Length: 348
Ligand code: AHM
Ligand code: MG
Image (tube, rainbow, N blue to C red; front, side, top):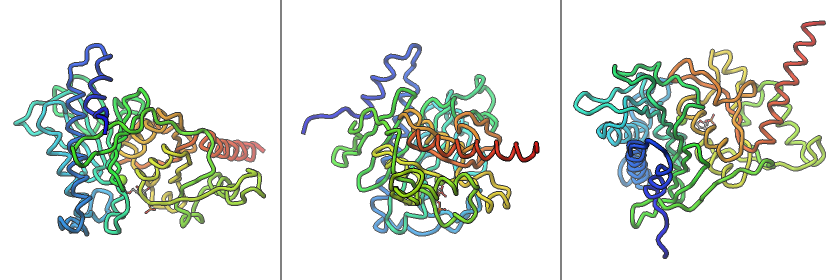
């Protein structure tokens, strides 16, 4: 087999064109990649390593943690705390910011991650993943950063990526210059560039949504899905296919590969609980939206572009509608039409 481009080589070559690059970012990404390899190994060995099942704890969201959620979180912290590139980390599995321990130097970046997304799938041996986002620490981060340092809109992300632990392990990455996918060669322990310049077709005939929530959906989402289900006899004049893996990384990866629309919209059940959505802005919606937009897709809540949201909390939840551009725009149009209709009714 011919030698491929390793992820390290790819990142170094990409960073070479950036003036003032110190090598810090390249080195940080290397540590993130190492963490993903370790998690991949744990996930692959599953029951053999005794890592399946629940831990006896809950995370900040009140969700029961899986053993692998806790292990993956630890792996990420340990891999990334020592090298001096980070000022702090934050994760789905920790209520507060994780400051870099005093024995290590503090750097200029912030790392925020969901160490094992879709972990309800882990015990049934279905794909899961890690999602991460890198931000610059605002100011010079002389003092220990608080949660406020992380509350930057998604447009400020320096890098976003995910690792997918599926039939093969993949890492998909953007630094704002397109999206590239790498496959882990288990024999040599390296991620090799296998999916250069990933792009999403603007049109699609495939949607992903948890349809068990249908009775709680807002009217624009109901309208969109009803029209998809009506198929070639309905207003869309084409038949749609449906997928739901309940693993956002696997879902986004499918969309990057063959197009589609993914939705976890706001619904009445969430509103009644005072929640802004199901998925978390900083370590799920933002990194995935950056990747999707960089691949020519779109990421929206129905009411605003996800990357424009000014975050208010570390674990803030938002509605997510992302994927093929024309389909996302169709849903957004339905939201606009509903808002205009309501405005007219109020004026009458
Ligand atoms: P998690 O971060 O607790 O794993 O939850 C996020 C996951 C997403 O990967 C997936 O899209 C969604 O939750 C599935 O939700 P549901 O169980 O309602 O289908
Ligand atoms: Mg998650």
